[in-house]
Every structure is written in structure tokens, then in C-alpha cells.
Length: 238
Image (cartoon, rainbow, N blue to C red; front, side):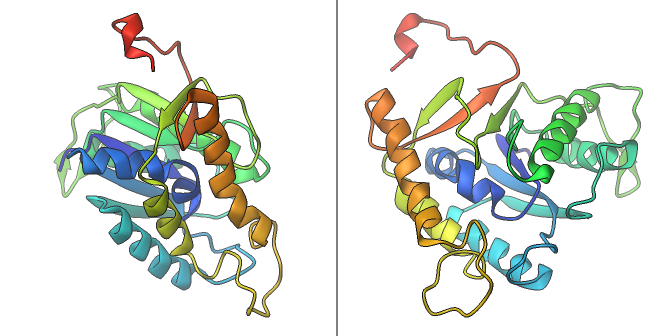
């Protein structure tokens, strides 16, 4: 299956929190979108890897993803090395996405910056014909996505591109809250974490509202780019 967009996150829930509005919008337009999780989030304070697997599957169904895969790198300890790059290259060549969305270039969690650079490097290397990979015993053809965009996470990085997601905020929130073990629940007795507070849950919406306000829409998601964004006509800008 060929994908239009592949969103890659260091942990299950990274994508839902950061760019699921864009995925939901493009899926509604007939685009094929998928998620690749680099780890199972096994070091998360709340829940477990098994619970996160179930939550990720539920979120995928809410969003209407075409595929979701997890390559189970070591949470907290994965490295931007040859083995990890090749694991991602195999997925890129398998699904041949036009666009890749990936972790923030700089963020509070160390895996986010690592995941960002690892994914970006793999996207470049995936286009080199002399790097050989196989799928089901067959050689894969080289493939490089046309664009790599980095979504914004904990830190309020200045976006280079802002995408209107008005009309898709409810789907985004449903996909986020599929991770019930992670987020705010007044009845839980589990340890509090930076993302389990009521304030954090509310911030998902008000940060999207603020970006929407800045571009004259109701809600939006922001991305940083690796090269200058370009348009065919000045009228393409809203």
C-alpha cells in the first residue's frame, strides 16, 4: 500500500497530540495516512507497553488510518545509528509516503529530538539506491519523501507552516483521549506526570485555538520545515 502521509513518533500518542488534526483532515479528503511508532512507550510512568499497544490501536481506528506499525526501538535509549535508520528505511520503502511528519526538532523529552533527527536522516538515506533493504525476501526500491515536516510538541516552537484543522478538533481530541492511562482522570490514584494534569489536557485545545487565531481560523496545527516552504501562487496563502 502506498501512503500519502506517514506520521512518525518516538512514542505512541506523540502523533495524536501533535498532528492528528492534519491526518484526520486529509483522510476525510481521501488521502491514505499512517503512523509509525518508534517505541512502545514502555518507560511511561503510567500504564504499560501492552496497554499502550491497545490505546494506539483504538486511536488508529478513531482517525481512520490505513496502517499503523511499531518497530519497538528501546524507549529512552534508542540511538540514531545504522540499525535504527535501516528499520525506518524499510518502512519508508514499504509505504512510499509523499510526506513525512515527525517529532519536534527540540523538546522537553529527549526522545523527541532524537526521533526527529533519526527520522530525518532515514528519510534522506532511504533515497540512496546503494543502501540495500528487503521486504519478504524481495529487494526494496529506493524512496525519498518529497517533504519532511516536524510537528510541535511540549515547547512552543515558532512554526514555519500552520495548517487549518477547523472541523477536526473533536476527532483529534478523541484520538488523544484513547490513551486513557496517560491523561487526566480525577478518579485515578496513579502517579501524576507532566501530561496527566487537567491543565495539560486543556492545553491541547487552547494551543490549537491560539494557532488558529493567528491565521484567522478556529483551530490549527504548526510545523517546522527543513527547507523553505514554497507556493505556486501568492494566492495559495490563506
